[in-house]
Amino acid sequence: MRALPICLLALTLSGCSLLSRSPVEPAKSTADAPKAEPVKPKVTRPAPVRIITDATELVGKPFRDLGEVTGESCQATNQDSPPNIPTARKRMQIAASKKAKANAVLLHSCEVTSGEAGCYRQAVCVGSALDISAK
Image (tube, rainbow, N blue to C red; front, side, top):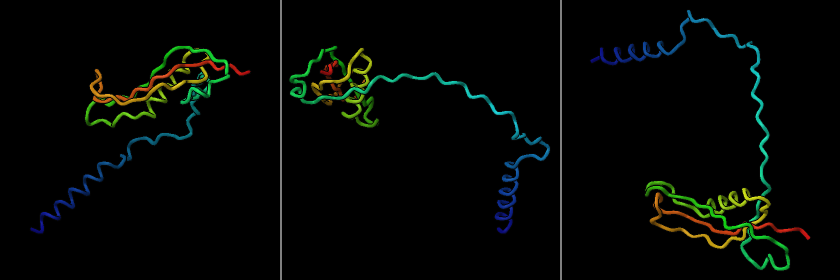
């Protein structure tokens, strides 16, 4: 019975020695020439689009409706994380920022639905992209 723990100890020690570096391998020099990092192109980000939840904020301001925009958050299966409305709102904002001259979104509705194609549950936000002119 004493032979079993001694064999296991010998096996463990020999297994750990296989993980160490062989002394025959040449050591890599850390004084290599510095690598030139590739130049990343400058990405121009669109101006932030604010979300307007109350249409009375637009009273007296000149604005132009640029069309409907949507954002969605999908839960593909029952085991996935549930869809959330803040993600759908953010995606709606991003969709509006891709429209030319949009600087605001008038939020019409956000809702969570079930049974959509490809989604177990889905959060959808719908709004209108707006170009609000400064007076």
